[in-house]
Amino acid sequence: MIGKELAEERNDDVKVDRVDVLSIGELYDRVEAALAATFSRGRGLWVRGELQSISDRTGHCYMDLVDPDSTRDRQSPVLKVKCWRNTWAQVKSLLLEEGIELQPGMVVLIRGTVDFYRPRAEVGFILSEIDITALIGRLAAQRAALLKALDSEGLIERNRRLPLADVPLRVGLIASPGTEGYRDFIGQIEHSGFSFKISVVPVTVQGPEAPAALAAAIGQFDATPVDLIVLVRGGGSKADLAGYDAEVLARAIAGARYPVWTGIGHTGDESVADIVSHRSFITPTECGRELATLVQDWWRERVDAPATIVESRALEVLQSHTEARRVARRRLAGAARQVLRLQTERLGRQAETLMKGAPRQIDTLSVGVVNRAARLGPMVKGHLTRVEDRFGAYRRLLRAYDVDRQLARGYTLTMDADGKIVKSVVGLTVGEVVTTRFADGATTGTIDTVVPAGLGDGARE
Image (cartoon, one colour):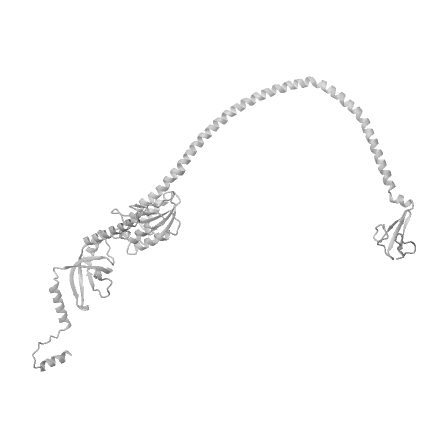
C-alpha cells in the first residue's frame, strides 16, 4: 500500500511532501524522545491512583494503579508501576515502621519517572517514593470515621455493657496455636490452679484474611455456651496489627453474644478492636493473669473467706461445747457419786431391816405353805374323782354307739362293691353286687329286685 502511494506520488505532477517510512526501532526512538521531552527523568513527577493489585514475591514490587474515580469502568486506564529491589526494601521498611500494609483498594500518591519498555511497547512508571504522610493521614481519617460510625450506632459501648459471669471458667479462645501470644495466655491459665474449660478456634492473626477470619471465629462462639471470648496475639509491627482496626472485626466484637476481652501485644495506640471490646489488655499475659485473678478473687471472697470464718466459728463452738461437756461430766460424776452413796445407804438400811424381819416372814410363810398343802390334797383328789366320773360317762356313751354291739342286737350293714354303706335304695340297680355284714360274719349277693318304700310287694324294677 505504501509502495503504491509512493509510486503514485512520483508520477503525479502535483508536488506533495514525501511520506517518511519508519522502522519499529525508529518509531520507538521517537516515542522515547517524546516522553523524555515531556517527562524529564531527572525531575520526576507525582501520580495519584487506587491500588488495584500488588506483588513483591521476587523482591521487586509490581503494582497496577487505576484512577480512583473510574475503578468501575472497564476501559479505565491502568498504570503499570515497578519498584526495583533496593528502592522497594527502603520503602517497605518505612511502611512497616508506620504500620501500613499496602492492600488493593488503597489510594496512594507515588513519585517516580515515566518508563517506556521497548520489548513490549509498554508505557509504565518506575516508583522511587511513596507519600507515607498522606497514607497515614488517610488511614487515620478512615479509623476516625469508623469509630464515629460505630459510636453513632451505639456499638462502642455495646459489648462493654454485657454482664460478665461471676466465675468465667468457660473461655472461648481465638488465637493462633503455637504462637508466643497463645502460649503466654495459656500459661497464665494453667498456673492459676483453677479448672478452666478452654475452647480454641485457631485463626490467622495477620494479613489481609485476618479480620474476616477473626470475625468468623467470634461468630462461631455465638452458638457455643461460653462465659467469655478472648482474642489474643503476640507482638508485631504496626502493619501486622493493622487488621485489628478493620470494620468487620469491630462490628463482630460489638455484636458478640458474650463479653470479648482482647490481649493484643502492642505498646502504641489502642486498636479499634480494643476500643469496642469489653476489656482490653496490652499483652496476652496480662489478659490471662487478669482472668485468673478475677476467678481467684471470687474464690477468696465467696469460698475461701467464708470457709475461714466457718472454720473459726466451728473451732469456737467446738471449744465451747467441749468445755460445756467437761463441766457437765464433772457435775454428772459428782451427782452420780452422791446418788450412789444415798442408794448404798438406803440398800444397807433395807438389808438390815430385811435381815431382822426375815425369820418372822419365813415362819409366817411356812405356816401358810403348810395350810395350803393340807387343803391341796383333798382338792386334787376330789377333782380327779370328778374327772373319772366324766370319762366313765363318755365311755358308756361310746359303747352304746359301737357297731359290733349293734350287730349283736340283730342289726346288719349293707355295703356296695366299693365298700361304702348303702343307706337308701336310691341308686341301687338290679344285678349290682352288695355285701351284708352280720355280727358273726358277712354274705355277698346280687340284687334281683329293688322295691322303694310305699310301693308294696307288687312293685318291681
